[in-house]
Length: 341
Image (cartoon, rainbow, N blue to C red; front, side):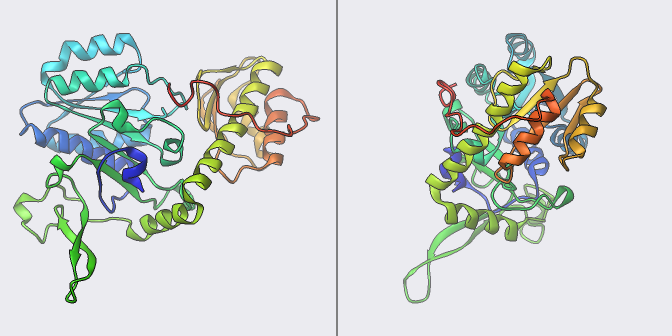
């Protein structure tokens, strides 16, 4: 499933969470060049909790984490200036503010590859049912959490992470690799073919010191996908996009607030005009809706498959003051150019 959505031929089973998986992508990039290049570039639109884990992991490797706005031409120019010492780069797709500014992603990958580094993308499996795959941008690694596929929030965890890559890094990635073998009767059988990160196997050559995976939650996510199937997953994603777009249109047309991200899948970042974030949060809490406070004048809203019509009606009232909003008979369809861009 993960290989199909990311476009990369191999995926492990599984890692702890998205932050840990991102740390492993950084470590893989560093060790792939035998520690000769000590700078790792991450996009400024990376999830903050992911950035924190990467920075913690980088300390003991003596890797310097550099944040650049890689979705902008300015960020590309800054990357070129330090490229000779860069072992890899990581971008968030969609970004932490919900945006889909992907015009430079392929260029980032080409630049990093020209210096023998690795290009990684932290991404969302549900979004990938509609968006271009990381492989189409030239990514060497795709990673993220499978929480979107049937796993409860759990007040922050646990959530299984996925980690997909190319076959050439088979023996360098952390995690368990399941391979096809034969049983004693000669019939096809699946077995653990590689356990490269385990300290009890060739401890001195272990690729990682992280020995915890969320195998149960990975299986839950896999079964969620099996139950819904490719068409069902696309329908869920299209519904999430439709609900997000309805709210975005209401905010843009019927309030003084501004949508910061020009394109979106499931997340809107709203720059408030005339109201403070705490005021908006207090209004939303009356409907038992929890929003994310970015700063004093900015809030963020993320949708998933559990959002219903009443939730959307309530959110429209929170942001526009319109208590008589009627849910449209038909959801907005995927915007022209959304998949390509």
